[in-house]
Structure formats: structure tokens, C-alpha cells
Length: 246
Image (tube, rainbow, N blue to C red; front, side, top):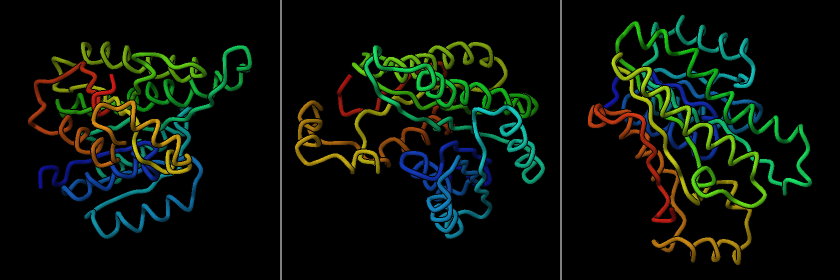
């Protein structure tokens, strides 16, 4: 088991991509802390699955936009597990509107969850990683950050900010045994895309050179690679998992 007894936090870790990432780490022997914000039913399902897979696990409700919430969550994990090896900043939301209809609340909320949440969680784990001279921070971004998308000025800005954050933090941490990278998933089959009708799904698939939507496990496998010893000399990079879309 490649990640036996490694301590992992996955924000937004009880649904969709985050859930797939959390369960994949658990299958490889990691201790997994799955964070979530609101959906208690999904959290209960993830907890049940982690109980079958992980030797140690936590499912923690916390708002990643709140510094007190994040600090309390990290403190609780450190009290239980002593240190943190891997952070996956996956928590994110969308509130799509054309800019002329986009109100300030929808702008602020997307920036807060996607970008500020990444900042707060990364900042909260840095000291424990520095003390061990080891750490992996993996941030989930989006093709919208690379190409832009109409109706997503808020989302594209937040995810583009994550890319710049990743590259800057990677330089800060490079001599301290900590790598910082980003994964850029394309169209992935998640609960969000399952609600789309067949015509839209067909249209999405036709835009992808590989001709299909990705699976959550495609993204999870990439995250696990970047967290592994095999990727120890990779930092500050953005790895697209999109079937050739970008």
C-alpha cells in the first residue's frame, strides 16, 4: 500500500471528485480526513465507505471560507494524528451567470470557497509539513482557468487564482520538502453532470478528443500520483486530466 499511514485531508471530500479521491487514498492505506460543508447525507455515506477501507478516518464538517473553522478542523486532526502529510484542496462551487447579471454575492462566494478556501487550508497545514520536512499540496483547478468560459467570470477567476497560488507556493516550499501542484479535470462524470440530459452529454463528449467524459477515478489516480514518491521532483505544475480537451 503506497500511502500506508500517510495522513491525508481532502476538502469537499464527501461528494463527486473529492469522495473518489478520499476513497482512493483509503484503499492505498492512508488515514483520511474528509471535509464537507453542508450535505450530511453524503457525509454519512462517505463515512460508511471509509469505515470499510481505512484503518483511521475522520469526516469533519467545516466551512473552508472561515479561518476559525479551518483552524479548528486542522487542530482537531493534529490532536488525533500528530501531523498531516497531504492536503487536497478540492472544495469548490459554481454560480454561473453572464457578468452583466452576476451580483456581488455570487462573485464573492465563488472566490471565497474556491480561492480563499485553498489559501486558508494550505496556510493551516504548512507549519506541520515544514516541521516534518515533507508535504504534498494538490489543488483542484479547471479548464475554465486556462481557456475561460462564458458565464464563468467568477469561477474562471477563482480557478485561475488557484493556478497562480500553486506556482507561487511551490517556489516558497521547494527547499522544504513540500511539493505543490494542481490538477485540472475536464468534463468528469459526477453527480453534477449526471443531471444533464443526454443531448448535452453527447455534445460534451463530442468536444473531447477521446470521445467520452472522464471518470472520478481518472482524477483520483492523478492526485495519488502527485502525492506519491514518484512525483517527488514535480512541483509548481498544472496537470490536465481532460481527454485532450485543452
